[in-house]
Length: 561
Image 1 (cartoon, rainbow, N blue to C red):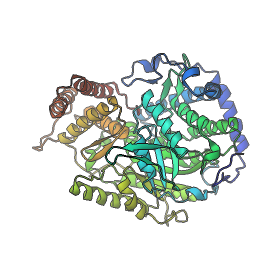
Image 2: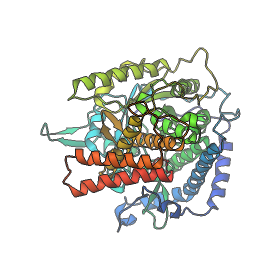
Image 3: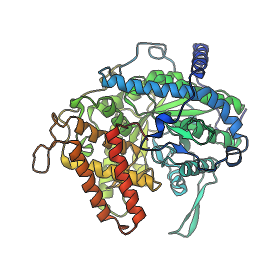
Image 4: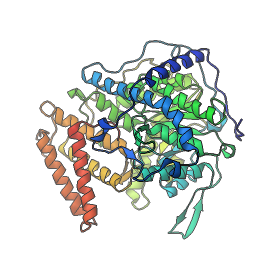
């Protein structure tokens, strides 16, 4: 039994758990018989699979005993991950054929009044500060911000390359131990983590991503590798809270069983209670929005709440409606934060969460405050307050921010410690999650050009080791990149039937040739604006970022990568 100061809180036992276990064992046995994952289908992708460096020796370069810890997890869970990824591909193909995601039939997860027992140590999550785990200074600043929760990210805001992944894992372990620090050159001093009640979450990479080069000839689920690396090395006896993860990019309730079994296999190997590891889960895909309650039921011994990852959700919504010209979205920054396809989901999540005793957490406000630009700073904080107030009125219990200056304003919008006792007076059980974006925003060539400019700059940031970049006042990460690539693709696909106007109001067809021309023009502008225009290596990376971005659109590679 692990000694944890705030305790491991057991959730309410469920009568059907043995059946869940039996079904999982049968599924595991079936998928074990399937062929091992091969890298051939991933080798030609524009964005390469993350791989350990050449000359890497797992026995020498990974923690002592980790390979022996990892292998049984890999044997049991990798075939299942491969099967789940294939089901995702089928779901997109079905959507393209007109069979879109829908709510599931009633089950034990939905009409019954099951509840989790929310632990006291995470009752207040009115703001969760989030950011890349690979930058020690940002991690320390987040933990010292006063935010009730902090999510250390190995996924969308961290470049998916070995060096950054490993640095992020190291920083997470040091942060969990309370030892992380950085040297502040401006103040000529070392800054350490201050003691606080902040709950630390780790967001691993999504289930769709792979990790190569760790076990010779084998592809691992990146999720499995990240969780295992943290869970194997952490000193449980020093944790003030249970080990907590943020589950990203889920697309079905069945995927929750994969995460449940990963957590429980690790707990068993570490001789911890079966429910020792806790989690929150992001609602970032269109299919997941229809299966939230079933997903939470499958993770009921571990889950603390659900979070609306709205920018990834917007990308997924486009992806699943790509063939429908009525879903060609307006320019991103002309879409109001309370647009119906967000708002309906924003109001459904608290209803489901509060029904079962879980927290409902809102999303990220992309416009960033500035300590140099007073006008931009005032606008950003005004938008932040309005956005979080909307989420609070939707009965969310908290939200995400990415800058310490946002914490106080965000926290102030939500009742303390949460709104778990509140339910909508007239809750709609199955609201429309695909209301068309009619009479919303503008569709302009300038918006297309801005999208192209952003995807080039974002990908250039990744090539320079940055998983998130501050662009034109907005903190943009993989979600933005994916939204914009999909927007460009849908405007091209439906260029004959959807009007997109130039600055004179003239409709402009978005042919592949026109898109290529815009990519060329924006690349030249960026090269001309670069302070490193004589740096051939920097210019080469910018050109490569332009090539990769257009090629991903041309090939239809829209999964988060």
